[in-house]
Amino acid sequence: MQNLLSTRGLATTLAFAAAAIVAGCATGSAPDQPSANANLNETRAGGPSRWELIRWQNADETVRDIPHGDNGEPILFEFNDGIDSSQGSVSGNSGCNRFTGGYGKTGTGIRFDRIAGTRMACPGMRMEVEGALLKAMQSPFTTVGTQPSAGPMGRQIIWKTADGDLLQFVEREGVGRRGAKAEAAAGREKTVYIDSQRVECAGAGRMQCYRWRETPDGPWQLWYGPIEGLDFEPGVSYRLRVREYQVPNPPQDASAIRWQLLNVEERRRGG
Image: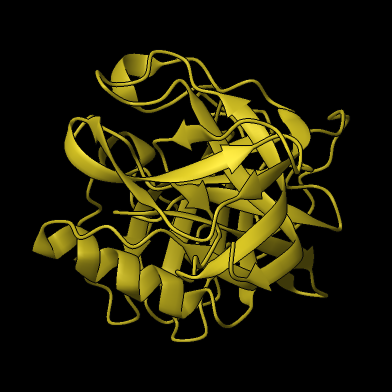
C-alpha cells in the first residue's frame, strides 16, 4: 500500500477511536483511515460543504489543542462551491473570528487567497491558534491523505502546511452551537449601501452599528453584526455585493442573518 503520510513526524498509526487522525507508514487499508488519494470527488453533487478542523499535529510530532468558541463553535471552513470545486469562495471560523476569502486547487493541494476577517479579541489560546492558522493559510497546503465516504466519520482530508504541520478536517453536515443545522447553504446575493460612519446602538449592551440601505435613496436601517471580509474605513461610504445567510438558532441577542462580503462595488469618501 502507498504510504498514507510520507512524513517523518508520523512514525506510528494512531487509532481513530482515540486520536481521530491517521499516521504515516500504515500498511493495510482500514476502511476508516484516509488514503493518499487526493481526490474526494466521488459522485458528490456540487454545492457548499463544511469542514471542521479536528486535529493539528505540529511538525515536531506534538499535538496542538484546538479551541472552541463560547457556544461550542469549532474551527470550520465553509467552501461555498464545494471542496471538490477547482476554485470558489471560503468562509468560516478561524478560532476566534470569522474569515472570508477565496480558494483554488493546485497540482498538489489547495491555496487560499484574499483572506480577511473580523477583529474581535478572544482568550489567549484561541487567538494563538487563530494566528497560527491564518499564517499557515498564506502558503498553499499539500494534500497528504483523504477519506471518501466509507468509514464512520465520513469524508476527511489531511493537509500539510508549508511548515510541516498536519491539519485534519472532517466534513460536517451541521456543527457548532448545540448541533445546530447548517446554515441555508447557498444564501442569496444582494447589494447594500453602507454609510460612512457607524453609530451607537443598543444590542447586547452599547455597541457600534452600521447604517445601511437597499437603494441609494432608501431609508437608513441599522446592521448590528459584522460584515465579514469588509475592512471598514470611517469616512468612506460603500456599495457592497454581499451574500446573506440565515443563521439557525442564533445565540441570544445575536442576529439571525449574517453577511459575507463578495465584492466592494464602489467606495466613496464622504457621505
